[in-house]
Amino acid sequence: MHTLAIPPAARAFDAIADSFDRRYGAWLSVAAQRRQVRAALADAFPPGARVLEVGGGTGEDALWLARQGRRVLMTDASPAMVRIARGKLAEEPGARAEVVPAEGMARLADRGEAGAFDGAFSNFAGLNCVPDLALVARGLARLLRPGSPLLLVLFGPLPPGEVAVQLARGDFRAAFRRLAPGDVPARLGGREFTVRYHRPRRVVRAMEPWFRPVSRLGIGVFVPPSAAEPWISGHPRLLRALEALDRAASRPLALLGDHVLYRFERTDAPAGEGG
Image 1: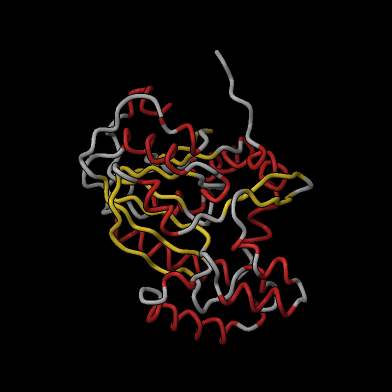
Image 2: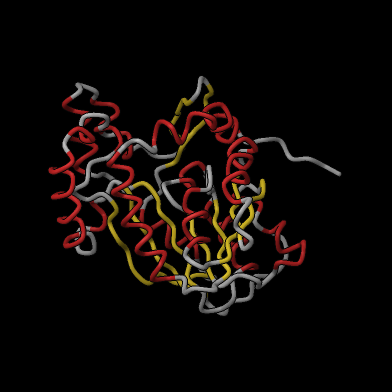
């Protein structure tokens, strides 16, 4: 059996998997943004729905959904992340985790999962590690039934909060890195990989003709990015106020979010084979 090489981004996340929850789980800004995403997930996927997660990391959202009565297949390209997720999901009969890269969704269809899901999602910019979103869309199209929701949370194009935090640190390059075209070098856990800051129009185009856009929601319009940590975690009252502002303004100011949640709906366009 042929085994695909682990992508560079997955190797980087492998390197930090054991410390990932300990670091990011303590940050209140991350928790605030996650609450906003979970409200959208609960709205999109009714209890009993079978949901596919793409790039689920250590399984935090999959675990939450399973405990809310959804059946979840969590996938990720990082074997170490999936190992941790499996430990969390072991007591949840409706949830499991598998090593599948975002670009390899068609493998699930080839194994008999075609049309088996009521919806899918990817949280916190996992797909910003994927250059070709159209390849992901083709694979997902084989797995989702017509009318199914697809929620993708990607980095926002140029969030003021990120710009302000990085300029305050004197890092001009980091402040405006999301404007860079093509692949942008990144480093995590001593491993190098690349990210791509997908433009909103190109995200929509990449999903055609299998998915039509429904809505956009700014995640972290006023709640600052993780670059503001650990400072913002020391100011919980301020953070609560910013979170309330997000609830009011995240739809009209969607493209100013640290992340943008794109909601799509599966069309009845045939998916075809491969992809």
